[in-house]
Amino acid sequence: MTNVLFAAISPKWKEYESPLRDAFAKAGLDDIDLRKDFAPEEVDYIVYAPNSEIQDFTPFTRCKAVLNLWAGVESVVGNDTLTQPLCRMVDHGLTRGMIEWVTGHALRHHLDIDYFLNHQDGTWEHRVPPLARERPVTILGLGELGTACAKALTDLEFPVTGWSRSPHDIEGITCLHGADGLETALSGAQILILLLPLTAETEDLLDAERLALLPHGAVLLNPGRGPLIVDEALIAALDSGQVAHATLDVFRAEPLPVEHPFWAHPGVTVCPHIASATRAITAAEVIAENIKRGEAGQPFLYLVDRERGY
Image (cartoon, rainbow, N blue to C red):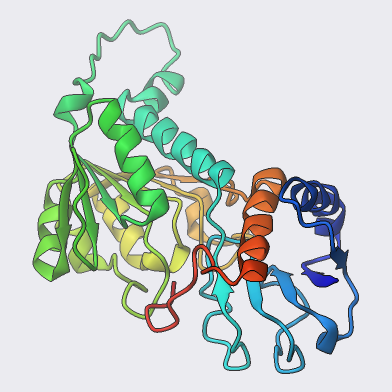
């Protein structure tokens, strides 16, 4: 019998129990015992959300892998007690959700939809947006989600530049890396999209100096990680018009405190971390595949590189 511990906040058990059991059956994993309450020394795999009560992995001496339910691992990857393999969540539903959010908001700003929504006053103003091919987009982060979004925007004929810390080669996308590449990527971004993981190297990446590299009046979309941006620098850039608008889905503190200036700023759209939620059905399929691989002695999918932090 393979013992799988579900370690997430209580409401998630009702959401995930049936999809997980169905995914295990579909994968041919007939000897799975899925529970919320194993003794630590009996656990073979942990299906894990970083906000669960389990923060000390030392007692889980038999555990073969910790399978994260979230795409982000920054709040667990530095846990010194976690010596087992850690796998991040990459699943089709999560990817599709991010593509839809990014393309939807990119088109919203590209077509100036907010302007028309806010000017329903009888004025007939013939404002024609440029074609997508005339609106350069930059995506910071060319991992699974960044690459998928870059390809979707390219399909809409936006000229897309992607930047990452290491070299990439993606057909149809101008790929840059390193410090010089970042400056070039920012300087051409009429729409800037942040899809980087949060690491020591990416925290506070968008400070006042880098925001100043953007074309005047650029638009910023952040469905990645809140601490990628220095909040005070962004507000100053919005006040000066350097950044025309920021649509933000992630923040340093969540829920975003009611007193935070983002709520009241006319140049900010606050979204409640909905860009790419983990969907139980598709996430369960990824977890089942990784357990199947672990039981067969095959490499795990989406294994986290502890040194890189993702």
